Length: 445
Image (cartoon, rainbow, N blue to C red; front, side):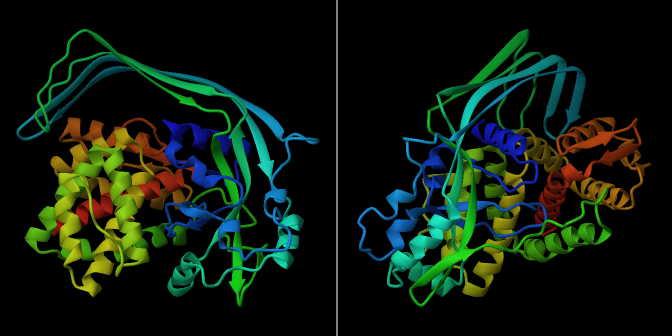
């Protein structure tokens, strides 16, 4: 829920995407002013920068200076000029009425009746930032500690480092509520048997404390021979002129990237494939496991020689133990493929992942993969992707399942045989393509 809020705030305050939402409330303390962060690996389905926390702030890696409080003086003062304040409010109510029946072996999932979802939020925010000239002045006073363990590791791995210079924080305690009411019947034997009749309701809420970081901006540091500075012109994928569709080369790049990253998943031995499939299914059902495995894979790619692959989860334990004893060349390529798959999953909603899991079980992922590719191609040519959905016409239930997955990625269905996706939804649809490609490779292994 916290991720939903921060994404809304970041998009409302900066539609260009420079403002980065914080994904976890437990991590927000690591995304405050002067915190050091690392950028996540690039992917075509992630056009805007995304960062990983570190355990350090800028002053932790600087040598002592003459002025004791030189770094603290950069932080906004509570006296004088107060931070800029904003308020964001919203209310959404969606209703769905209908029946969806998905036949599976050896189970049946039946959804029927009416459902409604409502969301409400009212959040007061304040913007805090550090003036860049002050940062520039600090580098003349304090040099970087090149012998700091963290700096040495980054230098060895040739990884970039960034410092947070602007944050959007809550100026008072806020509450976000999301409720669902449904009159439905669910029958499932996929994971557990349960049956419920009548009206059921679920209500989720989260209380966000005052001073919680919701979003931030970061600048790249340049480090060399104890000197450091600010990179004012970081690498950017944002073009000067905004197009009115997907560039054909962009669609080709998504397909090429997915094939390169996931190629090894289609060549696994049966035993290893079964181990990976078990863990992949587990993370698709449980967001916490998804985050845990993502962190493990990132740490393994950063430092394969010193990474500790331990877990309390039986769903991940065998996979991590297997990676420990893998040959280095196989380890890195396999870890990169798993990490890429998890990154794609992270861009999708929890409901979307469950629907993809159902699709994988009923073996319609190959058809869905072709369908998403066709939609991307047609939108690159500024035309409507017509005549695509009938590929599922012989299995009406499978078509409904596919329709739900597509709509969650922003695809607008026009009738029963046409689909259009706006450019702003390209990242979500590209992430869906990458996820489907990974599942297809695992299914073909």
